[in-house]
Length: 140
Ligand SMILES: [Zn+2]
Image (cartoon, rainbow, N blue to C red):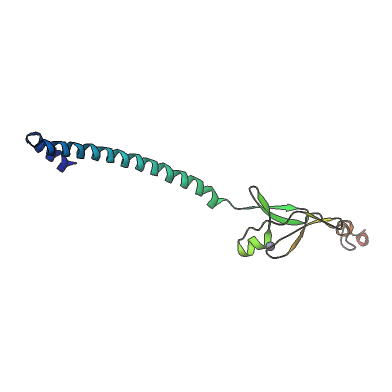
């Protein structure tokens, strides 16, 4: 701005009307440009803050491991259930297929590793009491 101010001061004493006009419009244009830069800098700062806020929770957010029936699934917000082995081994959250009725069980499949997961414990497993040990019939 210093050079332009000096030129403007010099032009004031000049008789060159065209020069005065050019310097005056140059001055206005520069002011408009400065305003635009200030506005853009401000906007840019706001955008950067917004981006930083939005990316922060995503970095920290770990999917939550929850037990459903006899299987463990990962849930990430509205995403899920997801395959546990795939996330643990590859870090890939793969949403499982829709629950499918499978002979009294409800199962889901991972499309990535092909594994089946049972949301409901199988009947015979639930009623099978241990035969030995303090809770088994032989221990009584
Ligand atoms: Zn899988």
